[in-house]
Image (cartoon, rainbow, N blue to C red; front, side, top):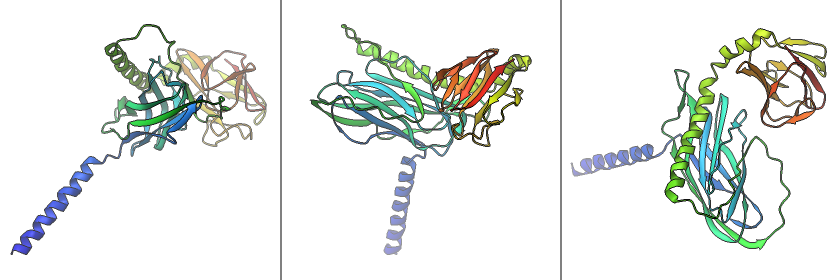
Length: 324
């Protein structure tokens, strides 16, 4: 009888342990990593914001605390397809990043890479102060993904005082977000004020993402006024040259992938090269990572208003004229 009781007690203890481990683990998490901890003055530090989520997301925000005496942030980039950076005012000592996408994106790995330049010899830390994932809920409104936990938050860095030449900048893939801190001032800012402004920036970043996502359905209403002019694209050179395409449904994606509304079978056009959308009674062209030019001027990871007669070139030779 005692052996039976002991067996039952052992089973209960094992079950409680399994339940406890299961409760502590979360399928939705964000954490910070770095490839190395040792640098020299003048080198570039690259830290990686990672995430695992069983739910596709449509945006994310993050804040990373750094020592402005040791490091200067330069930029961030996200390798997630369709995820675009939303510029926010930066505070000295705090990187504030926000990204949003119009379509859900599956994630299980790198959310963003954040780059810093080392300024002098010191020992310092990078700390993930906050991070969030954004989704669209069942009602079609933007919402924060619940149950997201923060894993590893700190990265320790050892910066040698030896100065090295600035390295050659390597090409950055994905949507680029500039992280220019404000100029240094002679007077210090109280810590409590920095904290208040940091909270406001986080709220503001999440609000911008949610606003972008929430406004996406309304683009159908807004485009009706813009598209009443029956805008069109006259393809002048490249695949489908001589063809006129009416912009009756927006947004439209242009690229080599057959899933695009306008497919250009051109080796110099990437799979999803650009997007045309309408908002505020105007048409816009957004570069999605290829070589995009309007009237000979390069468009890089941004949106530009389209005017009648504008000449758009994608890649080396795909050329069309916008008209309305």
